[in-house]
Length: 230
Image (tube, rainbow, N blue to C red; front, side, top):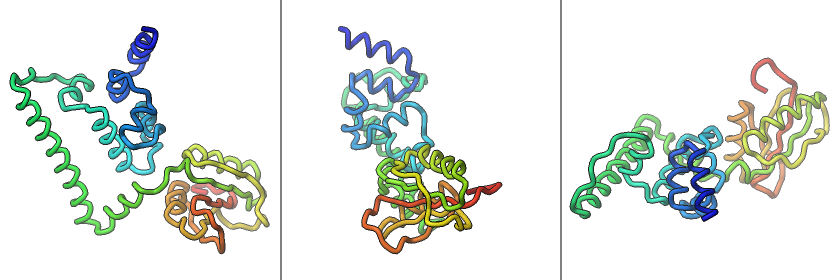
């Protein structure tokens, strides 16, 4: 009984439809994430409305669909969670199953149409979206931030910005010199894709490292502070 009361209190305080669906089934975030095959942090981001945490909008949409499917949220429950009017249940259970299958088919068709439309207008767009979806999550990437300009305050501000993007800062230190003209992301062999993602988020260039064995470790050398960008 204590557990049930706790769930009711959380449901009353939480306005997220996805959280309502999860708690209705008496599942923890970890249990829901395991069912959906996604990271617990991604479920929490969805429930808290922090969609900016996802690397791409496509990833946020995919995780939403996986979570809804894993929780068994059908069309009627989705309308109820959204506060929209619903139709009376059909008398024949087979008709309800058929309606749900039709809705699922429409959703799949819509997703495929979006993918095909992107691929038609931009041949590499769908490939880029697919590549972004399979990149390791930011929190699985180790980042070394080095001061290459002599401004320690600015270097720590850049490190804080990277950490706010959910990356793991493992070191903030000094570069071999303070003569770096701009901030750049340096990547070892096999890490160009994750380096490009971070560089786009920071709006800075990328550069390959001459060596390195960890494809999930990046080095950001911070250049001078600028009025725009880094």
